[in-house]
Image (cartoon, rainbow, N blue to C red; front, side, top):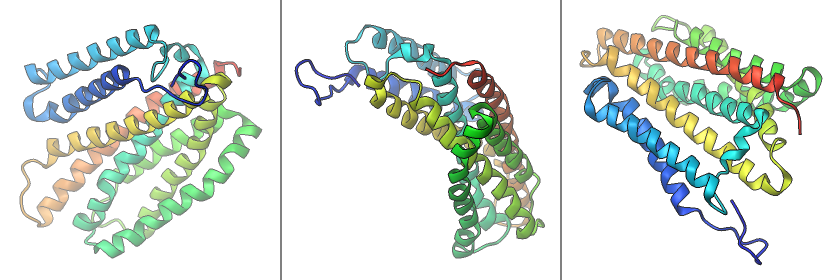
Amino acid sequence: MGRAPGAAGTARLDLPGSALLVLGAGALLFGIIEGPGLGWSSATVLGAFALALAAGALFVRHGLRAAHPVLDPRLFRLPRLRAGAAGLAVTFFGMFALFYVNAQFLQYVKGYSPLQTGWAIVPLAAGMMAVTRLGMRWAQRIGAARTSGTGLALIAVGLLLLSTADAGTPYLLYLPYLLVMAAGAGLAMPTLSHAVVTSVPPHQAGMGSGLQGAARELGAALGIAVVGTALPVRFASATGHGAATAAAFTDATALGYRIAAGVVLVVGAAVTYGLRTGRRP
């Protein structure tokens, strides 16, 4: 966010840039969500993706010309910033893929009450908080690339492990799967956030902070959209609340987890490479 001339401390709101960013993200999410129902080759879905591309291109053009853009596209010339932002996005992509269906799985498939489900998820949050304290220490010892790469790999492994769970999986086996994901997020998030913040020039620190928030929100939205899109593919024909419905939901959840794990692995490899080759400012 730029500052108004002669008013050091007063930030200008970039309404055109913000509108283009929201329009592009909204069109992308709409296309992903409606793809299975309307057909990936339907005019509506293809139009949504085309609108997302057009809005993105206009956003970049506007950012290059505006005096005070909401996000300066030139920042993405910095390899560590690109890697850090992409890493944050894919971290939240994987975690929110879990958040979207985990509680439903525990209640509809495992038969937990809402209270039991809440207690069952507590170790996930506790594990993330515990490991987050170690994330930066590991980064200082073995480097940001290895630390964040390990974290993203653990998120992918956790998703793949969770995709094997079904109604007969005991909680004592399900819990380690959650803790693997917690450890991955705890390692990746502080390391990637630090990479973004330390990549931007000091006078653009606020923009770097905003980029972190945008990457997290976009990643979370895409994670929910992708897993939510995978559910109808396998779950649309199931009705009622019997064993067949629970099995269909389990199958649909497993598909969503595997898709999310593949995305995290591919993007995670690119993020690791970017942090390894990018120079510190």
